[in-house]
Image (cartoon, rainbow, N blue to C red; front, side, top):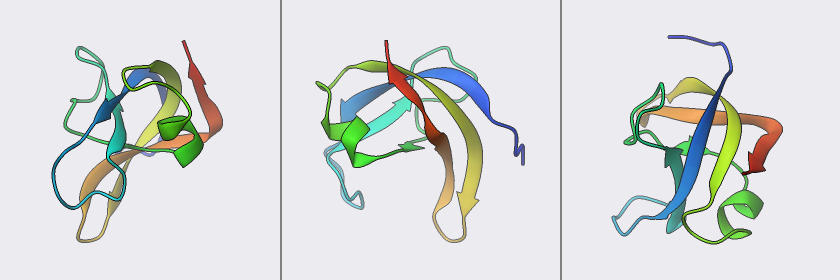
Length: 82
């Protein structure tokens, strides 16, 4: 698994399924290095502080939490709205 941070464009979106803490989530945009089915872990301030659909520039790395599968983690303080 790659442990390097890379810069990608992500967007917030409504998630209506079960198993999520927040109904507003963040994912890579279509055509980025990572697929859209990977959520980006970032602060609630980012997820809820901007309108749904806002795009952000973020430095992320692929991470795996045992039992939860792959997800992307945004580097601290390196996610900003476009």
